Length: 284
Ligand SMILES: Nc1ncnc2c1ncn2[C@@H]1O[C@H](COP(=O)(O)OP(=O)(O)OP(=O)(O)O)[C@@H](O)[C@H]1O
Ligand SMILES: [Mg+2]
Image (cartoon, rainbow, N blue to C red; front, side, top):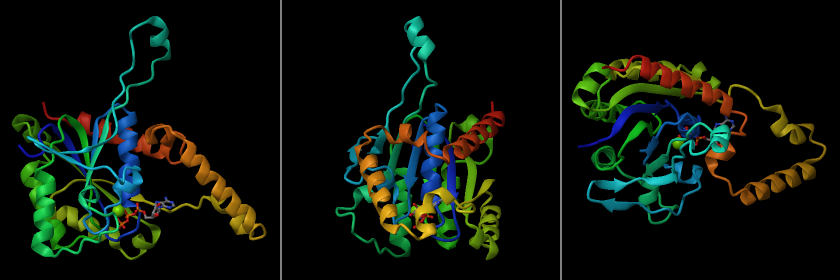
């Protein structure tokens, strides 16, 4: 059965490209995993699948199993150990697994541009929705292509045949619950009323709105301080190179490095709210 084992589906939408949808999808996925949830990311942005690059697995290949395509592991789950009192004392909250599926994995060359039109695109998205074997997954996050066109409506309608926004129907029929959509926007897009279009899209397709993320709304001064002062651009470049080398030498898992990221606290709170909301309204 399509989406077998998936408990909740969350769509990540944006009216415009480049507003940070893929970054938001990944950060929410990492934050949910750090709350002990098993997470899948389905990247159906056919024109620019960026999840493989963001998770640092551009060369990964997907395999076909009897149940469907197998998603690629980003990290496995880790259970808190309760074996001995010492281990109990050090026990960390358990971390859920993170797996992802992207058209990027199917492209022979990562430079391949996919220029598919209407029906072929819809067929590919349909296959992506139905033919991936996710197995037990608490949250499946779908990184969608930018826009709210008819094609998106077709996608949402198909999703609504595989899942339901009604928690009681979901649990009675053992199908995924469509928890809702996260709308990503930027201050500029807000000004051009893009977010209203996204919200209308959700109303038209009966998908609950989980929240709006206004990305890039603040200004991280320290990140560009060297450049802003404009006096030591060489120092700034040196610093950037040093940081890039340090990042390459850092062999820790992405999820462990993410805990040190300044934005983690925000996404942690978001993940907690999302989990709380979904669990408190779950159908019995
Ligand atoms: N809060 C932020 N601060 C600074 N840079 C950011 C932020 N969010 C995203 N970016 C950067 O902006 C660029 C676009 O982000 P991302 O790829 O996540 O957007 P997208 O909406 O998925 O784009 P597309 O429409 O191409 O799929 C990336 O280079 C990303 O690193
Ligand atoms: Mg993207």
